[in-house]
Image (cartoon, rainbow, N blue to C red; front, top):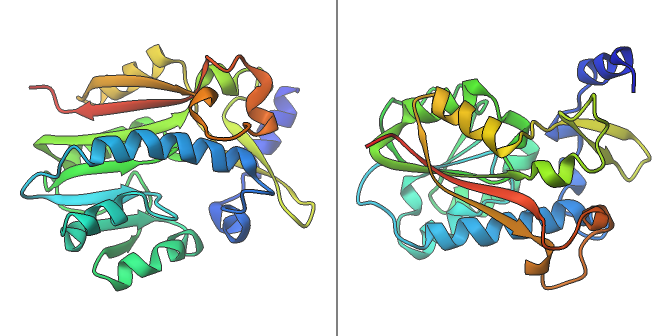
Length: 241
């Protein structure tokens, strides 16, 4: 793909409003389904390790929230803040918002929440906003003992089929035939960690999740690399102690 074509893609990036109505259709979009399942496996295990006694609990770009049901089970749903720039994606969490969670329409890198008031940030498949500004916002928001749970498609998988000169977009084929390009910033582990550390944060834990962990045959797009290679990369991020 030429640099001109790459620039045209960047200039015509779609938003999640454009794909929200069918994003969770697992039959039509099995790659989204499988990546979410692996991401959720990591996030739920860490969320269930326990909530702190104070501070807000936020999920960035939740769509169908992973955090809210766990918080509800722990009796702390009222501390949950769901932040999404797409009203249609956020509507998937309406039951939790009706039940006491707070909804905020904002971008991931400019939440307008008070500094140092968040004990847990959850970001499932946060590649659309995986940039230095987002990590600076994470550093601004979390309490000294707070943490951020972050997952992203792995570089190993995304690099196996994305064009070499255009690895910051993901293709989404909508039911009406529209071929949309979504922002998807995926980096090698060393680059990802360096960006996190540049924001004044530290990576406490990193995991790779592969298709062998799925309870079904993986989506066709996930079969382009060995089943032992990670297709999702997951991080636990904190302020340095």
